[in-house]
Image (tube, rainbow, N blue to C red; front, side, top):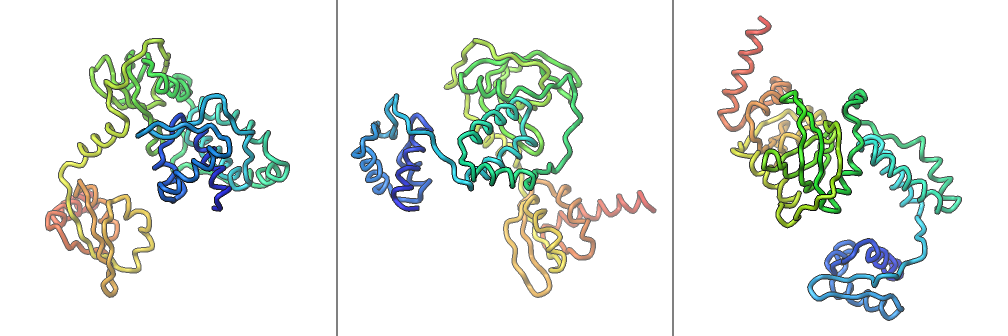
Length: 320
């Protein structure tokens, strides 16, 4: 990227946030902090009202705006891909809002970019690994936009939540700390005032939701990143170092699977490949390993062999 393009991109980045740290600019454009300082100074000398707070970052003075930004065809194609993902992996509220945003984006595209998008539209598809569940009127699945508002404004949420585990619906008042998407569902992490603790709520299990006018103190709660890190550490517990020897001609069948089971290292020794995994459950790993039959051999630990023998005995008792 030449310097003129970089200066324009830095200006757009500054307009996108209230405060932007110099390190953020350096990381995005892979430049040194000294270069960031020179670029910002060049923008200031060109008349752009950029302010700076020591130890905090740069900001654009209120009231200054760039003219409407034009999108390249590559950027427009990336946004189209995002729209396809939203259609499959978001709820009704976010799909609707993203659709409105895409209409605005399409309206400012040049004619050639519009034609380019139309030609791509029918040739890009996002397929879910699992099919969507049938629509259920009792779970409208349209609350993500409201939850995002509550997160941004530190507002308490009042909701009716159905637990499939207990098969009961309860009324909850919660203080949201973040949302994340995992597998096929969006999750709301919040401090539950009823249970007096942090809880993980599946968004598609919320029957009713209202964002209240009550404001909670965000500093009293942990961040989403801290919560996820804590849960990851809690769930790891004891970890087992596992080594197996697998026939080389089997490797092509587990290109992606091996990473799901905690692959750490892979080395080839003749017609075998030694795979090293870190796994919290020997039984979980054994149920995957048994699929490969005599094409796999356990190097370590010996406890895994015992688990495999138990599974084989279980199968033998079942089928013979």
